[in-house]
Length: 215
Image (tube, rainbow, N blue to C red; front, side):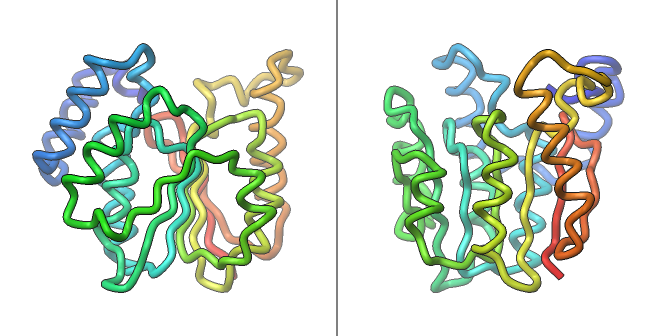
């Protein structure tokens, strides 16, 4: 859930009505996510989806990695800018929900460019020798710092990496957090800020996106 959606819904509606319209397939997917899942708030929001689409369209990436498919909303947003010979690999471990993204991926014009895998992301990153142009991480917050360490060698100059939920509903302001996920997210943000190989900015969009570019 976004900050404005919770604290100032009028501003949230203003932001949505002044953004590009949501494609019909994404409207259908968002509706089904709210109808059929127990935690629909996990879906990438409409505004965040527009950000992912625009970044992908600007970059025209050949190789995208997504960690955390959920129902596939962000995946479809990211495919919008894929190079003609590009692909996106999207990873999740929830087989029970996999029927939803598979359904919408099959309907997509980019269906042949989507590689949906039910696999642990750490395992995948340790095994692959691929280099990624664009990476989006939105799963398993307690492994965020480890994902950053594993992803770094899989990037090159100009690669963009995005971590979602890095403000963690404001919990990152806690000095001595007891929740492990909060501790790890704070660790991640510190690691990124101190890493001279990246330039970054935390965007206060929804629950915060740490936006990185490899120098």
